[in-house]
Length: 312
Image 1 (cartoon, rainbow, N blue to C red):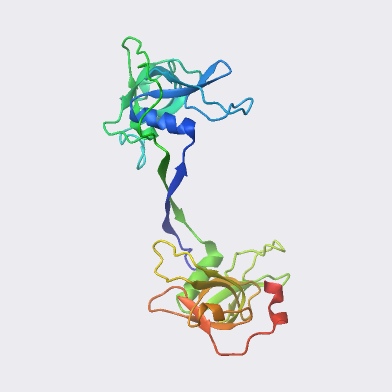
Image 2: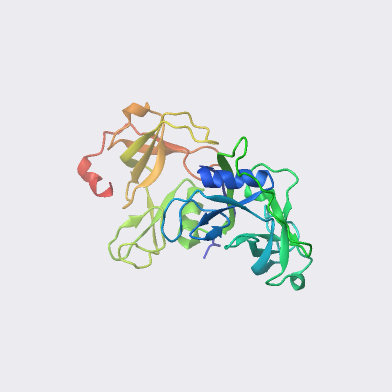
């Protein structure tokens, strides 16, 4: 059996969100070295929320709490990952700040797990450069000094933070499995190979290793195409970042000859407004490509609707 493929994969994007009045005040306060909570039902919640977790009523009663507090629970992080608050081992801790009734999750800088315990006193270590983000709290650190009182801030700040951009990233090793490994290896030879279900006889391209309808394994390989038929399509008018394709262009479902399932592909070699259901197409390969760059018209007459209606 050929070796199953695997490769590192990174999914990364910036997540942009706007802030309501409560979160705006909280993050702006951090920029000014002030920690704010919100008061509701006789309790002060830190970090603040915009709606009461019990009654669901909107809450706006902001109040300052102290930058010192008590560890309520913790877990030791022996191997920090990229972009975590500290690059040396640290504790993740829930800290109930003085004046608050709920705990805030953040990093606690300590020399080792033996130096951390529930009930220990800590204080905020502020970042040297603050922009109005949770990272303005660089971390917490052990503290055995006198109580620290709130600054008496009016919770009204100039130039409030109205939005944030949070980078999201996921690193993992992806393996397509046995069936799709065979499919990818065939693509390297400019061939499309699917697998036939032994029960319903449908040919899946790309293959999935099992028939989703019958629930049985698919092992029989079947070469399909290379020609196919456009079943449905859409016209793309918004240019994607890092994609060197001018808009408008057409992205289509293409039923390759002999396949029981349509796959996705871009249509080229024809004006976008001339693409239609039933258009007969063939793949266009570029040098050293592992998959078709796009599909173009073959010049054949359009396929009859009844030949592909079950693949819509």
